[in-house]
Length: 385
Image 1 (spheres, rainbow, N blue to C red):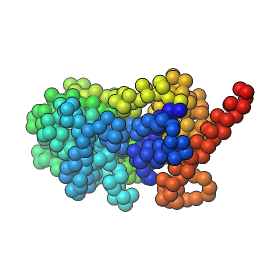
Image 2: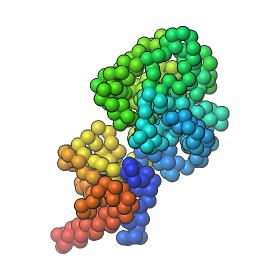
Image 3: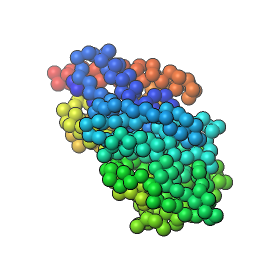
Image 4: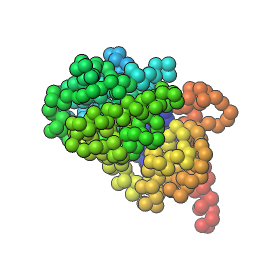
């Protein structure tokens, strides 16, 4: 039997690499003769670098950058030396996991650190950059990112604005003359499964702002600032990208990247699927085991388990999902090729307990899954005989 193990991260508990290792170990402990292929997954957000380096190799580069609030931290990105390619995720330097709930402050948070990671990759000689947009703590439309790369931002008095954060409405003009010229020669691929436009109910502010600390009362303020900045940007851009799918990704970083550079948007999941040869492994697999922290009807909107299930279904390979919690309308996922969904929560417990004991719960749930598969195999043999 060949089983492909390809989970996403269980947010709040462990990343996709750890989840893969736990599930794989449980399967091997149950039957060491089973062939297990480990492919940690991600969708362009947190864990993208780890997932790709684990599968395709490469080096993890660490450098000192600013976190969303301007504090110096050590952040990392992936480096493929022989391909002169860097794999960077906004979550590493500008992500929500870097802040406590009390520290969430979109008026102050900046994407500057992500720009510093890009600059370091350019200094290293990068000719290809994959930038994962996801999990950012910012709604600065990528102004901070470009400031780290030479962008000059001025207010109406002609004074330069340092950390713009959520004060996009104060920007009167931007000067792109000193933006790092190497950006115009590098192949830049954006890995993101967010298709939101910049503005509106499904845009950067209204759709994702609340999780970054924007209150209901503040939403119109931030939306107005984002709209104002879009007009300023369109003065230097050859095209208006406000309605372009993905322009609202990572607090509007997608919009500025599209407006200033020649970038290619790709589904984060599809990109990782191709780079890890997931499709080829599935062709000879008997089962795919995937998972994530929560699964429900909204998972149909491009979440990792559903995306992998659709590929496996094309090859007639069943999929089992192991998850932290099962939400509403999860039965809708059966039509995508998911044959079973197992929750790691095996009794009444608080969220804190589930997170604290997540590794053990995931291991034991995988063992139960294997026992059920064994029973199914025995019953199948009896039926044939």
